[in-house]
Amino acid sequence: MIATALLALTVLAGTLLAQRASTRRQRSMQADTALVDAERLVERYDRTYADVEQREREFDELSLQLLRRPTAEEEAAADRAERELAQQRRRREGTFYQVLDLLSRAERLGASPEATQPVRARLYLAKFREASLTHDSFSKELYRDLVRDNDPSGLLEAELAARTKISITSEPVGRQRAALSPGRAAQPLRGG
Image 1 (cartoon, rainbow, N blue to C red):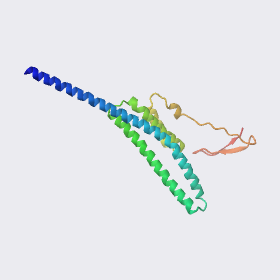
Image 2: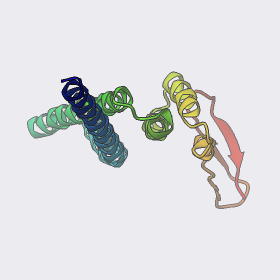
Image 3: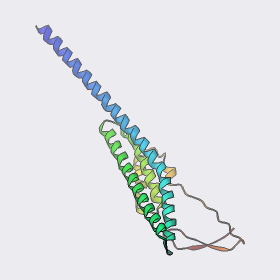
Image 4: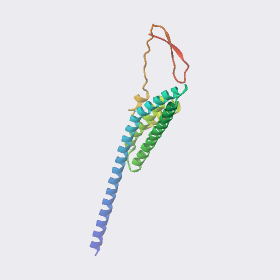
């Protein structure tokens, strides 16, 4: 009788341990899936920025056309472009928050910060680039700090510090050109 009870307890303990191990494996697989989904969305988020930029340029061109007496078709095209651009921005913003949710889920399921931080850093880097292109200095600083906080290895530091070099040649040499930089006064440049 005691032997039967001990055998039953042993079987029960083994079953509970097996269930626990199975639950851990399931959680680990779910965390991995959430992490892979987040990585995929970050890549898509990064790729779609070129589309948004193109639509913004198109909208800017249409807006310039509206400064003169626009036709009804031009006004309709500008309205349509503005709606499409707003919709695309909302989708991108939704993707941004979806990635953050997936990363939080992965962490709740047991993913390590070492696994989630690089994905989060790449997402914030995409937002940093977006803020840089739109000359949003507040957001640029915010996302620069978030990239650094989530990139302890410093692999993305070079991209944060990247500068664009331009070369201006004027004909004839020495002719003055105005160079405008957002937030700064125009300063004449000497060609050469």
